[in-house]
Image (cartoon, rainbow, N blue to C red):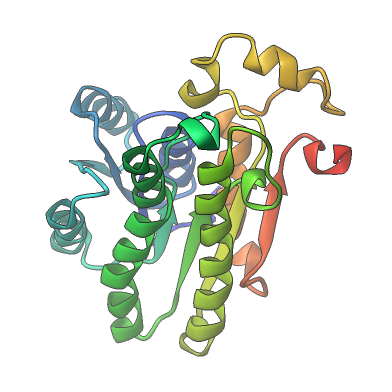
Length: 249
């Protein structure tokens, strides 16, 4: 316990799944957490539940594709806690559709949600980290889909591949400022995104060495490792947590 004691963490995509699990885990480890998501009906109860446990967390309703919302998210974090030590870019969407049937609008939505919003939020947060002069950590959620792809995942994998290389480039540039940047690559995880597609969890679990999907909490532990001092000599790295899926290629 206490691996993030005294630090302020910002987490996006945090009203369900991996993001929600990370909010609680980071708070348990001593962080003050500003967390963002589109669904106020989810974020409000999460904030209430964790505050009742004694954790210092603040929910900010945020559409990550809206620049004004991103600016407001950062503004609230600084006004409330005075700094941002950890940025966990976790928001994203997954749409399974054949390339020939996918509209440009849908493809743009995937890229905006999974990559461009991450770029824009880093543009706001990185200068704050640099100006403070104390370094920081950034964790970007990519996917095993950013390492290899499959039918119906062309646009999704393209966006997650962009996250992977964006992370490496940013790590190289920000290293001299003691800002570490690493990517998290989940495989099958039991979130709304996967559970909403009938039969997908069972089908994919059957070919995994561990024969199951990961829990949001298990993936959140990966984000915690990349965010805390235990990974101090890691930057530009890829942490794959996929139940062995990568070994099945």
